[in-house]
Image (tube, rainbow, N blue to C red):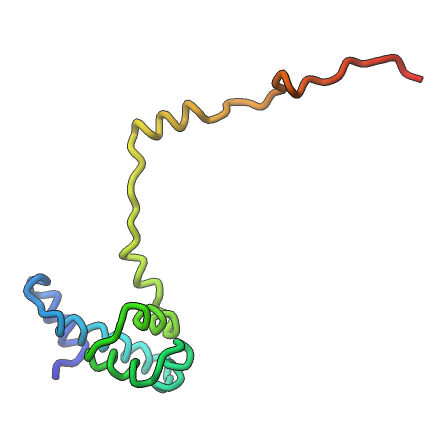
Length: 124
């Protein structure tokens, strides 16, 4: 079996599209296991924190399966949820839409017809 460091080098040096799903599962599982060990936590501790069964964590660490929800829960438990930031979609605002938004932006505060002050009357 290839360790996580070797797997990382293997995937970085070769075409990503040529890698098998199994290779990626092993890479993700190795990542989870390495982070768990860095935290000096047992599988049971992480599984409990993630709200998953220990066998689910074991399967994921071995690259033997799991589901996306469990993966997210485990990432949260090991403090690595920010790795998912790479998947965020940031659609830029088109220049035309930005210009339109700027034109619609209120330029100054003022009283409208509804908000006119009442006339001053004599004092008592």
